Image 1 (spheres, helix red, strand yellow):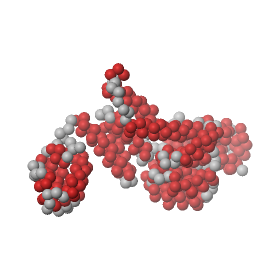
Image 2 (tube, helix red, strand yellow; image 1 turned 90 degrees about the vertical axis):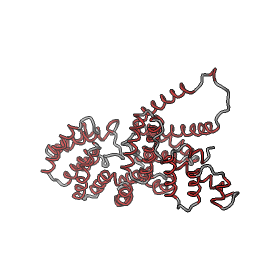
Image 3 (cartoon, one colour; image 1 turned 120 degrees about the horizontal axis):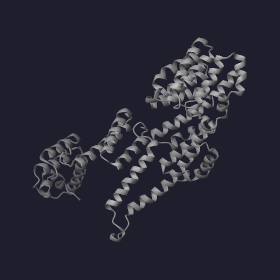
Image 4 (cartoon, one colour; image 1 turned 180 degrees about the vertical axis):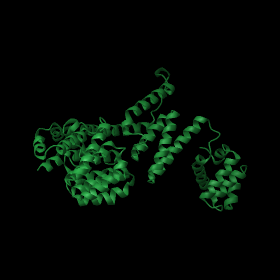
Length: 457
């Protein structure tokens, strides 16, 4: 174990003075910690008995050795604050990359999302350019924990897996001896422990991943079966909090996709404080709660959750919250206020094509219900051009719903409604299979085919 003297011997005179200054900012100049460090810096030749005499007035004082231990620990904390000019360029770059990663986590944990994301992205660029695959994996983990998907996304995982596997293969080839050269030795107990833990986690995460895939494939019977089979095991081993949280959220997503909104409402009310602890997962659960309230026509509760929780918790998603608010107001037939909310969020939704064009569709629905014929003609033509521009990049449900609406708007009312029963676009929307599947937790908060049918009645 390195002593205080050995640590200080690695520093220049300027660095030793810097360490003293750092220590002075933490403690007063009269503190024993500062006094001991000052003696080691300025009078390194003194023996322990002499130093103990200077600080405690006794040559042999048991407190002196405890003080030495605390000062050594403090030195180890302060060393990273020194400039690493004497290190090799590779080590300096790695330290800098790690510092950026640490700084980004501190900022993100304090809710400073924008600045934290910038530092995380800078760390990622450094890790990529300098070939630090292990740090890239850490950056991905931080990005997911704090939902900073603009830096590195879940969709990047296959490439990340190949990077890590290649890196491990290189390390094995570099450092792992061939079987005939291997010297028998005891297995590392710590590695054995983490391997056992990882094996358990791998199985649990694999199960959650399978359930997610079943939901994505719209194989809801399989998802239901997997959830029922695995839920007792997850609840029994709930100390593995991260995977249990993810299972709980995945279950709510399944319930929403299968229209079991009331169960989601009950789960959210009873479990939000008990199961979910991380801020990011709490935000996700609150959104699921909102979707369930909205689809159950609990509009006042949904509005309260939106304003008192979601808008306060995550103001950077303001365009999305405004979009939700517009749908709430529309369902409450507050058409003018709904239109105002649509216009307030529309420009900022351009980075999310389905939401942006979904807001344009909502605008048509509002104008249609208000019988604003002149404005409707203009907005229909405007949306037709936008859909042509975004062709192939947006949900097929928006395109089909627009064709139905445009057909109703341009034909005589009686014949247009009669033609609906055989309209291919409407039949596909109602069927809701494959690419026409309606997702209740996405941009289409009101089913287009349901709204069109209600207008007919």
